[in-house]
Image 1 (cartoon, rainbow, N blue to C red):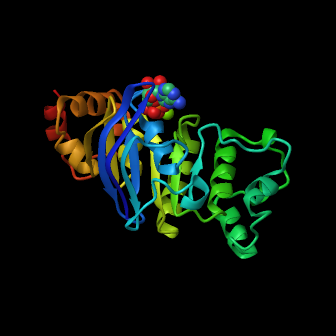
Image 2: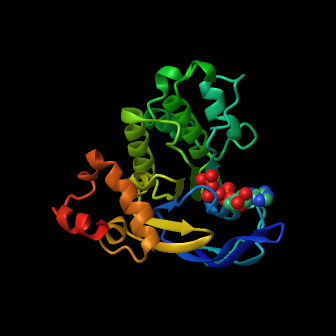
Length: 258
Ligand SMILES: Nc1ncnc2c1ncn2[C@@H]1O[C@H](COP(=O)(O)OP(=O)(O)OP(=O)(O)O)[C@@H](O)[C@H]1O
Ligand SMILES: [Mg+2]
């Protein structure tokens, strides 16, 4: 379990994250959702160890990792721009992290990930020859061969659309389930958060607005921000909304938003 307790972060005297408290069970997919500048990437960076917190605790399996250096936390991130090596082919990108630590993943485990992510036919290609969705899958494979204890994804779907977006969403879900891997995904798209995750963390101005299961957030929004930011944006995407309401409760939702 990952537990965040009373976490605070400021930059240049300005408080960015106020008092963050949450718990994530092993193997859960959690989305961090909120408008631009609300502190999503900052929270991800604190968990990863890329930035230091001012106060609070980050407990992983009961141990406070706040003062554990990033490399030793064993969490891993896929950055929004993928950060792949343009001069290396796909296979070398995927296995890059193993060159000094070949024992982390067996050859078979690497091969399994290549097949799971549908990359076998692209292994000899240069990165520039790939589509956005293919690059995203290479970035996922490169992170997964390192067997992270927690997988962090910053806006993994924002550069993608349509069928490609749906297929990457399915791959992320499958990886989290197959590897029983705690996965934290930053997004500013409510539909993405509600369809992809077990729980959604909604942040407004560095404070938790609501944290819960997608169904609870849709049916019991705890405040006006959640109602307006989440549900109104969803209604704009009316064509997609019915996929969210599998239990036939559309009229109730519409009434709540109105
Ligand atoms: N290294 C930094 N130094 C100073 N201020 C920072 C730094 N990193 C982030 N901030 C500030 O913290 C706030 C939150 O930034 P953050 O990147 O966490 O937002 P975000 O929710 O990820 O936004 P977006 O959706 O646009 O990516 C912003 O006001 C930003 O300017
Ligand atoms: Mg961000």
